[in-house]
Each structure stands twice: as C-alpha cells, then as structure tokens.
Length: 270
View (cartoon, rainbow, N blue to C red):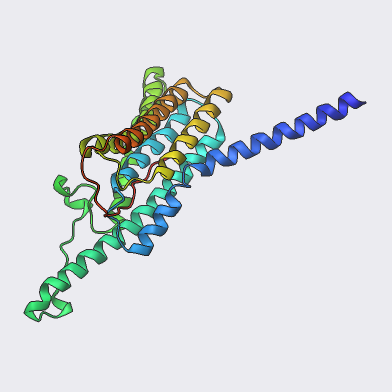
C-alpha cells in the first residue's frame, strides 16, 4: 500500500516538474525583452536595440515551426516559437513608432530656424514594396515588416511543402533554424571585441542569457529533442560564456578609457 502511495506521489511530482519546465521553456525566451520593451518606452529611444535581433529570431522560429512538419519535437518548443514570433512583432512595432517619432522631432528642430510649419515637415517613407535593399529592415511602417515576414513565411512554407519528403532537406531545415538562433549572440561578441570593451552591456542580461540557454540545452537533452537542437544549444552556451569572459577580461585589463555614457543593452533569445 505504501509503495502505491509513493508511486502516486512520484508521478504527481514528475508531472509538476514537467509542467514547470514546459512553462519555463515557452515563456523563458521572452523574459529578457520585457525590461528592454519598458526601457524603450520610457526613454522613447530604440538606439540600444537592434531590430536585426528581431529579424534573426523571426527567421529562426518560422523555420523551426516548418521543421516540425517533417520532424516531430516537443509541443512546448512549438509554443515557444509562436510566443517568440509574437514578441518580436511587438518589439518591431514599438521600435518603428519610436524611431519615426524621433525622426519627426529631429526634422521639426532642423526646420525651426526657417519658421516652417509642422504641416510642411515630412519624413521620407521607406517601404517594403519599394524593394530598395539599401533600406532593408529599416522601413517606416510596421505593416512593411509584417509584409516581409508574411512573404518569407509563404515562400518558405511552399518550398517546405515541395521538399517535405526529402530527409536531407528536413534535417537541414531544422539545423538552419536552431543554428540561426544559436548565432544570435555573435554580433554582441564581435562588437565587444571590436570596441575592446563591454561598456554599456548589462552583465545581468548576459547572466540571464547564460542561465536560460543552459536550462534550454538541458531540456533538449532530457526530452531527447532532435540532435540539431542540443548541438546548437551547446554552441549558444559557449557563446554566452565567451561574452562573460570578455566582461572579466576587459574589466581586469581595460583596453581604452572608460566613458561615463550609458547605453541600453541589446537583447537576445534564451
């Protein structure tokens, strides 16, 4: 009788741990963007956040969803991708509106000397349908980003539908999806190396990246996720530790004078 009760307790505990892990996987990736979103709204400046982060994560998570059509993986990972796509669209919407407001205010200040009226002040519009590569991913309206994401999704889904029976294509699609996300930290790594400093980068944010990526990689291994997931997860953890090493090295051996200007840190997915 005692053994039956103990088995039931262990089963309930296992289910509870699995549920908590699933929730952490689904929503953990968007947590770093909450303070980033609030900071942009508070300062009305998006200069410290690169919208290319949104581009990389949108591409990676769209490809991951398509990968599931040919290779099954855990449902929480599917929901993680959906939540991340929604989050990146919200960030793009905010960044676009803030950037356009900043450009308009700059125009107003520059026209003050000539006594120009506000009605005459116009900010040049950069549209997705102009197909001008000089302004790719720097458009003036949020709807242009939506059009680009939709066009990419339709094109990628069509190619996936045609080649879904190809094992090589499906496995390559999965690797491309997780590898793209794994490389998200490399721009920050290169930026620190180029500047010979980690000034302006939040150490707390990097620690959040590292803990999240470590947890995620462990989850991949325990749930026997496809090999692409945990290999790129390990790569992501290595990049995080490399950035932490930069924090230690450049603080102990400063390469340039430290200014007192503060910057908003860039963001990354867990």
